[in-house]
Length: 321
Image (cartoon, rainbow, N blue to C red; front, side):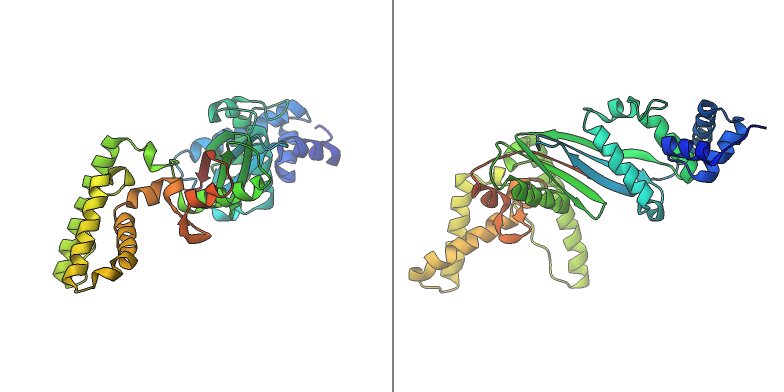
């Protein structure tokens, strides 16, 4: 029987990240052969991974990394099965180690196939950790972003976001953190309503109106207040003619209410603003620049960014679950 020393166990642990007892058992099984011990741990992980392949891995850690000159960033989620494992310091440390490696690759597939160390790929490392931890471990979200300046924000190890600017400015770090926080919180998936395909907007309008109409049938049955049924859902639909008609409708309401015309100019802007708000719900949900800014909901994100004389060049977001 091979003489397994504490130094041998520690060396295997440093290379693989496996627990002390797992490393000792692997070395004993491999009769002290270091490479065979690594293979023993890997096969254990493969067996556990196969048994847990259909398990949901919705917990874990969302992490980010930006290079030294802030021109490229990476965000990933390292997923596991339970919140207990996801909060473990060693697990979070592994996630942070992996995201620093991930920044060198353009896709999750490339990253998984890359070398974790001299003895295994990233994918093999995840399989090994599945065996060590006893839970399914995998890379969930994976995003890379480049720009003149890239900043990041991570919310509670659950959501990570990146923002790229069109140029580097003095306030770049603060601005990209604020916008990344917006992205993490509100979950936009496009920059502006101008990016929406007209066919998508038309189909989404029909679907949303149908849902509200159905909801109102139930609310009416219960004698509750009905929801507003919008005519539109995006500023892309609010042509000059539509806005002009909205103004005429607002004037008609004021006239019917007996409001004197000399005060209409004080009331109309608010009514038009309300009309726009009620009829741009898609933009507010999906278009970053058209959302209300979370740190000051009296302004849009576009208004906030305008004060910095720079443009948002792109953004990315990953989330657990």
